[in-house]
Length: 459
Image 1: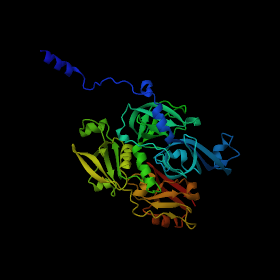
Image 2: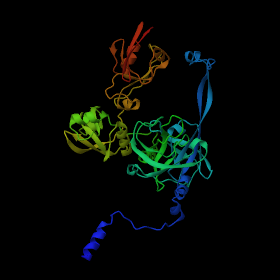
Image 3: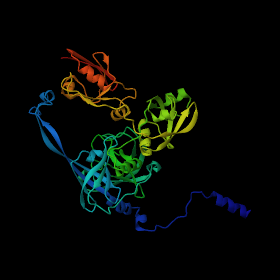
Image 4: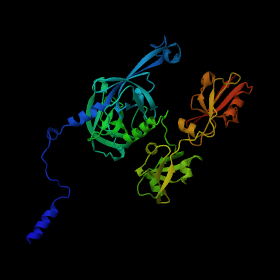
């Protein structure tokens, strides 16, 4: 009887119960972040960037009515713009990652370490859409480095620290938790994509700084906040470390611009209505509506109506998530894509390729003997479609530069010319020939986003 009672008592002890442990250090007694901060802050830097921009000075600037009418009137003058931000050292020889909006197009960049050492730096790889830039610090060696963590292992509720230089007051640390994952579309500014959300205070100047976990590893690069006042409201966003790692890998390989794999797929997230119509138990994934003939997904056997639910085992429920997962997979590799078709789930291997620049874009600048001299056009191909974010089925020729006469009738970069005076335009050669003809009136059929526009002019 006594033996049975002892067994019951042992079984009653929770499996997760741990033996109480005496704190081993003053930091454990005070529950301080100080030891972690001492290890991490030397690898977070302040960045001061300058660039010269041309600004137009108008005599009507102070008049609320005439300044709009004469917006392009007046002389241009050079003006110096200063920006302040933060960065993270990722290699001992001086590779620093920051935000593109902090250092992009800067002509003079100074990197200041926590110990007040200063270095000049230059951008070796930047991407405005990803809002990331990699700097090379000049004449630096044996710099402190922050280790990267697999950001896919981050969970909501983890303790995090945000380190940066808010408002230029000097290096500052704020604490919080990971309050959300897979945020897409919530961040403002240049960045568009997939973010880690945190309530650790992030303010202007924190951009490009570090978001670290309780072990001092980089899980994200702080990039933006949601705010109405300009200060932190407890909703901040960081670019995940896995994308940062791929960005740095391409920078070290000597890439001149950040290359992301091309899907050649259009679709929409599966919502509750779509899930109900397809007989799915829960809404998940992206349903394919169209594929480009050169799409690697088409080559792998995907078809309209298929549902993509995961890439490399990680769920995707929006276009930014899928773009992020493919970017992390990297160019030249292969991704394991989970497909749902007719209720059956399977994993398909898809090659990660760049958008083909074929057929050749054949960029042409129209000369003085044409109706619109200075107009620069290109043939549409997957590379051009990806570069400008155009619909997969776009046809016609793309306007790279409207030129002075094209701008006067309303053309903009990114417009697609589909027809000239009713004649269909399928190539730059067609556009050159049509706009070289002798005519008294001009009519252009133009596609601008989802709008169809007809532009007319008397010659």
